[in-house]
Amino acid sequence: MTGYTATVTVRLKEGVLDPEAQTTKRALERLGFELDGLRSADQFELDVDAESADSAAERAEEMTERLLANPTIHDYEVAVEQR
Amino acid sequence: MTGYTATVTVRLKEGVLDPEAQTTKRALERLGFELDGLRSADQFELDVDAESADSAAERAEEMTERLLANPTIHDYEVAVEQR
Image (tube, rainbow over all chains, first blue to last red; front, side):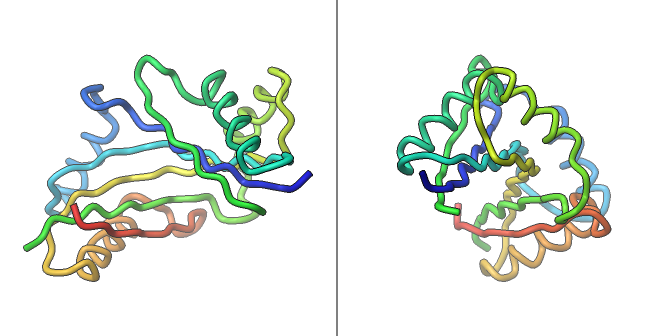
């Protein structure tokens, strides 16, 4: 077994409203910054022991689909690195 | 001017308690998953127009220090890509 860190990034799907990001963008604009867009995402770093990077990625995907993301409104990506 | 997307990842500093991550880890364990650790982070994708990637990164850092991160408890990193 080897230690891996799976980084899961959970984003809202294109078209899903993100009031938090809109508020953050407006707050930055009020501070004088110009920006064309702002999207927010949640990131989870999962430390897991697994036989291979593929199996660590598979476990991280299962955890994401069971708990971390809501497939109705979220897309996600998983990146695995050896610890 | 070129369009860039600056991805800012804001993490809690080592040693700062993260009750949300602890709760998420316990919930995953209750679902039967084994994991050694879980850290959460916020990610912001900022679309900005700038003269160069360096200047886009500098603007993203200013925005992060003014609003997106709290230097007392957060570390952050910025990655810039051309849009």
